[in-house]
Length: 493
Image 1 (cartoon, one colour):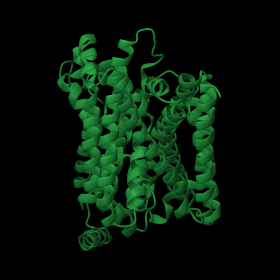
Image 2 (cartoon, rainbow, N blue to C red; image 1 turned 180 degrees about the horizontal axis):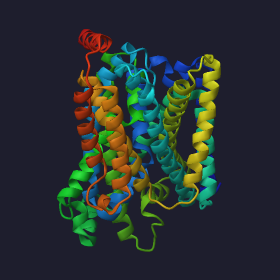
Image 3 (cartoon, rainbow, N blue to C red; image 1 turned 180 degrees about the vertical axis):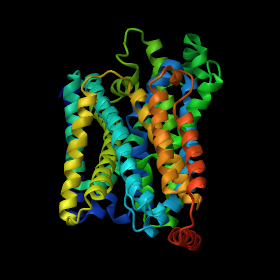
Image 4 (cartoon, rainbow, N blue to C red; image 1 turned 90 degrees about the horizontal axis):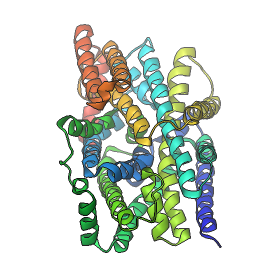
């Protein structure tokens, strides 16, 4: 069997396994709550790995190693910011959001939580937040599809569009049939594959480059600044990179896992598992990039086809073709885990937050689940149109969408969980200002100097607080739910 056949076999087996998990989840999905939130019954391990896998995406195996390969550890400030942000998210958001979303009319989406928490009877807030999810997740899903095309192009020499269609097709199938449970269960498998791949590639790669000492000396001879966090850093650059951590508070596809976990007690265990997984995976991604620099410097006759494919090419060089195929499948896992998570959240926004809010539908659960599946197809089609022309790097697409959610939803999530006086009007205008700021700043030359999430987050927070103070009126239902949430958290910790 040729190397190509071994690797393709591993990929095919992986894709079949994902569809099989989707079919298994389909049998456990009976209503809209199951399809969108898994019945709020995820254990700590599933919640942690699902949050991590849906969070890190192709950025972890392609975007980050590619950035560090080109620019060195100065790009590692992003990883540090993300690690801190994820840790704070598990501490401050996870317990309260799990309880509050259930106390507040059993909210199963972020927009419905805003609506129920703030008693916004007009439904405008719910519709606005649903539209923001639609717009920014279309960019985010598109980035995953771009990564799928790049993956097959780099690994097998396939046409970019063929790769895009294969990745999109399989992801759509298991998300379409199995919903949130399929996404969560596949995330566990995918998160495990990503972790093992990122640990094994740099460990075995160091043996090819002559050990840790030779690896470091080779990099120093080529460009010593690659090993420094500060040599080429600027103050605004470091702030921009660390600011990625702010994005966690507002990522619907991540924080929805907090809503689905079994109990507040489980969030502690999930935090330890999730942050441990994340730390080791980020270290592995950075190490992969540095080993790649040393290897390709020591072997100038071997050309790296694409800096974002450094993990892929090293895996093919280091391991037996079938094992290399599993490593390649880990890249697919990173891509598909995030795309599927985003599709299910976007589907829920269309059905639960826009369709039901606008039409006040009394449709049955079966009809709503079917509408959710149609929404998955609709969003996928739009994202594929955006991804058809590969005109942005993966990191560019991800950073824009990440900033959009972080700036428009992040401050509002924190305020709804910790401040009694936030109002529906304050939340709505804060979200709009945050989303528009990211779009305007991110598409201007200003983005070269400061990551758009910083001004977007600060302006959203400022506007939400000021408008809320101007429009606040005490609401006994809000006060009751806020107090009940605090009591439950205190009792369950």
